[in-house]
Image (tube, rainbow over all chains, first blue to last red):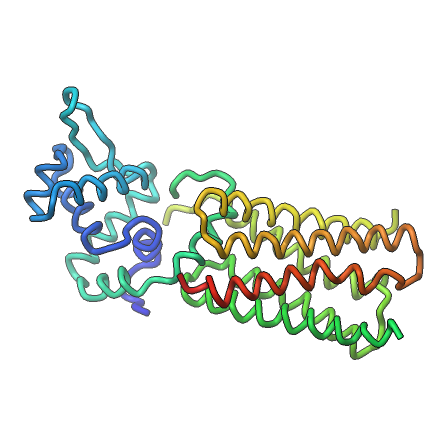
Length: 131
Length: 91
Length: 89
């Protein structure tokens, strides 16, 4: 249990970022902000396959962290745009944690509670919008 | 004859409630989500009610302490659900 | 309606609400723990509801005590089964 990682970063990671690859993908968009990036550009920069990157991007979109901009039919780009102030603040803390406490952050990402517990708690949210 | 089953049933329920409480408390420790603490305490209260029934050999359920404890437990569960849906405060 | 009836009705409704939310969660996420816990709260709701019936229809009698606890026992057993086998995924 790392106390050096703020509580809302833990929640952000456990709710929306299942792996360090997701974290780094998110940070790519944060650093590029306000410039959008396409899946291909992100994949090349992170040296990951494009189809894997596309899946992770879809996950980040569904989590309310990045939004899609359709530049032209078939050419889609994405931009960092958190769906709320709380989410934005959590991402800011995440950036800081990645910079100053990367090992602790990795621990938080991979020492996570069972998904069933998360789902149990989430079931009691009446509305399903991300925090 | 029937009455001989009462302590057995109450004991089984109490044991079940307390084991569930242990699981909820473990989830609370892992997720830091206070919903699990609330559920854990609620189930513990339900277990306590059954234990007291056995100790006092008191099975009638329209007595104050019985429905009082049960009410506390379910109010806590209700509160947990409401608490989960309050907007997060920006810090 | 006596206080006890109101209290147990409230317990039944709260438990039913929890069961419904968990059932919806299971329907959306297919997480098995939610199925078992939903059934548990449904059992607790039914037990409390049967208690209200018992208090209203057979005042002062413990005729239905054993039968009334069966839904709660089954529900708890299912919850524990779910916590033990599906609580670590």
